[in-house]
Amino acid sequence: MSRSNQHRINPEERRASRRRIWRNIMRGLISVGIVISIGGSLWWLNQALSISHWQIEGDIKLKMAIEKQLAELQDKSYLQTRPARLHKQWLAAIPDMADVQITRILPNSLHIVARARTPIALWQDNSGHIHLVDIKGSPYRQIRAGESPDLPMLRMSSSQLASATVLLNALSRQKIRDIKALSEIRSSDSSWQVYFNKGERWLIPHQRETMVFKQLAEILSQPHWRTRSWRVDARTTSRWFIRPAKQEGVI
Image (cartoon, rainbow, N blue to C red; front, side):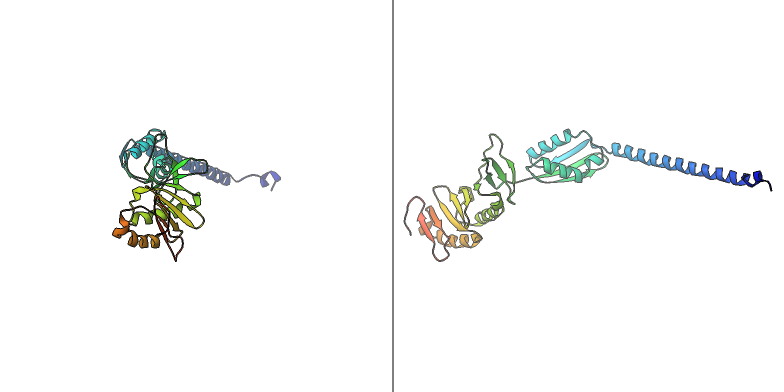
């Protein structure tokens, strides 16, 4: 056998190799076509399910805030208006909203139920700014110009706000003084200073609020005590001091 015949490629092998190459090319083209087709279908579906209608239930101010969020949303496609995504965005953007339930109604509608956050007190920070405080003790926004909510003022560090809400809840349950008469709460290292109107002030030890209010209710509900305002010092467990709100002397 000559040397030239030794290096000659079998025609059948050459044709088989070409067929394999073409099959691989065709498979690649088909795969690309499938990917493009699926991608195009998903893009079309994403746009076809864009939001164009919505129904909002809740406080009028929250409805207006949500309307604004939707109006400013440039891309209302399906992926950009997923309920979980909108829920996260709106809670961060609308501090007066405690929670929102968002339900998608196919093909292009949203049903929205918003729940307002209820402030229970005001809190003044170290810079003098006044914030609204919710039931969890979280200051969630500064009060706006011209806004004057009739709420008690909390003058303490931010770390004490959660404990102060426990005190406020105990105050709201007691039947001695109307919670609307409460004007201010301060905190020292071991006690609360609770100020009502008419000069009334209570000194209540930390972590004993419920017990003190129960015992005070038994005393101040009696006819002899009921009609007057008092200064109460309940910090000492063995002896309480109860004075008229605008006078001195131990009773």
